Image (tube, rainbow, N blue to C red; front, side):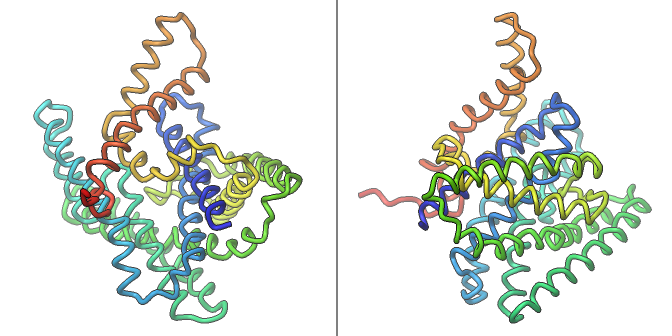
Length: 353
């Protein structure tokens, strides 16, 4: 049961990371991008909440849990930030970015605001710690009230920071300090997703995925809810947890909760698709490499050339080809890191026998 449970979570993360790639493709139709944006990042936080429940991490002592999360999340953040820094040096030398952009990117990395896609790692690290500390120290359902209060306070802080940022947008020092504070605010706004995953674990664990009828119901119910969330997404517009753009806050959370749960339930019913679970297990690497390692750029260029050679012009085929090429190129990075540089992921290098 434990193995199956982890497999369906890998399925969820695998699909979610593919949606992240799609969301970064500029040629994706706006309605699709808007729909994806309402849940493709929240679902990672929901899965982390489920894993906290699976591993019973709220019972660990604080020092142990902080150390564990730091190794698994923030060590990779530092190594990938270093690689981004080296890429930026190359871009400065090639005149692809100016010195100001280089400095801003470096400050973002050092202050844990995160350059580009790396914002996600400090956010999920802090969101998990917020939740675990609240859950450990508050009994019954008082912790739920505390999570809601934390999120409400964080959102009002976000509004104040937006106003302050607009007033001092020309000051690199002040905007950098504001972004540093935003790192903690963003994590607090994402904490309800971790709490939601923790709460739904009990219900999900009772689903008997061994019965074909129940699995079929899970698949169709999940797909129905995902489709049903589409009008809510269109109403709310494109949202962005990275920049804390939520539009209508109530609609944002409702659609994110519903779509995340639907995606998880759907994956409980689906058969295990090994390529998807592979990218799910390695979603952190794909998250970090697909954009700033120019893998997505290579996917777009190669897709254009391939379709030009075969003489086909179809938008959906073009997008599918981009995703496939990005995933294939990402395998090189995944295998390289896992086999030769596991320390990048906070893992110990395997000793030779």
